[in-house]
Length: 97
Image (cartoon, rainbow, N blue to C red):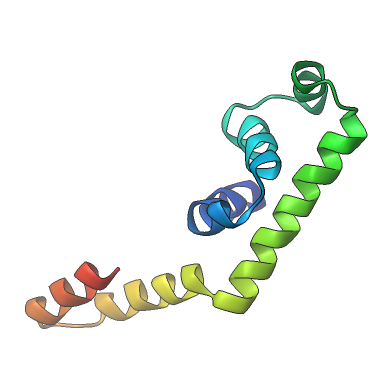
């Protein structure tokens, strides 16, 4: 999976654990496709400061997934569902997800 897409998925799981500024910069960069220069111009901080905040947010997202593994567990359960023949059990697992 492309790193960008993976980070966006991790953000869906753990984004609320980031600071407000980290969320704002992450969203501007990844969801609004703004460059570091554009974010810097809009917010009044240096490109380096914006870059550092985004990198810190990325590191935190990787850290949370490493420790909590919510995305990995979901993918594992989705793979298990594929091998189950009983529709009732499949549906119950999907409800949990």
